[in-house]
Length: 174
Image 1 (spheres, rainbow, N blue to C red):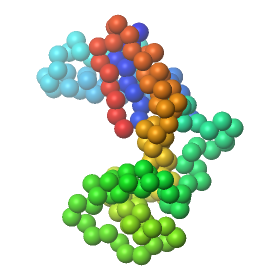
Image 2 (tube, rainbow, N blue to C red):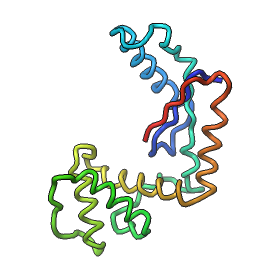
Image 3 (cartoon, rainbow, N blue to C red):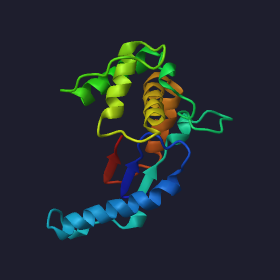
């Protein structure tokens, strides 16, 4: 078992554990090495790349038979689930502190949902032409993780099988 296990973030449905492992392990080792060189951590804490594994749970979100990821055809019009709407509004609130929401709507979606989306898409954390589809895919994944027991169980199992008695660090991010 790996000394360090990294749990990937959302939006990784179509990659895999081995595909993610190489760049994640190298980046983690480089970051710890940089910290060691600066004297911030002991030099013997730098992990070897082979001591780093990735717990891959993205497949839990795949739709059987689908050729595109879950965010492929999403638009703000698809945000009809109350949990997704509430989560989107909470994200927008966090992103918008001090910003006035744009007015108007581009779809027959409740204005408050459209404003939340607009606020998030103007935030420094999201930009580019695929930002809306990505954000909606993330929103859908979060709702599915917390709302579908089978999805959550598969994700948790993917993590627990990677963590063993030799694992001393578990890294998770969103």
